[in-house]
Length: 90
Image (cartoon, rainbow, N blue to C red; front, side, top):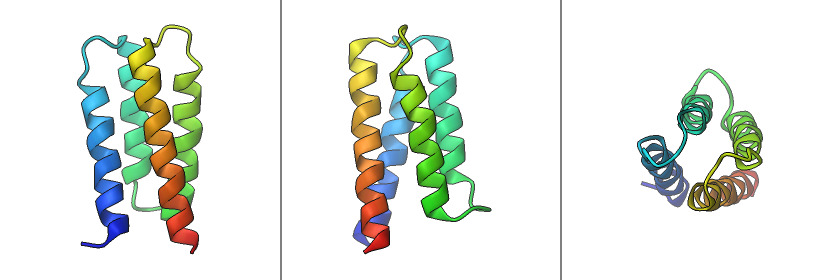
């Protein structure tokens, strides 16, 4: 497994953890699930999926109802997605 695959799987795992976090409001968990669905939709190119997922996660991070720990995790996921995007372009 390459570093890119490992990072991709780590991101999906983090998204799954947030999706199952019952301390987050339901609409936030639903948004995380949608971003994860975007990221795993293999009918589109990976770089397009990453950009779309980052956009969706940015909207979630700016939601006033998200708790601090959830926002922190969303920012960590976005950072890892940006790292993955840079690795793909190199």
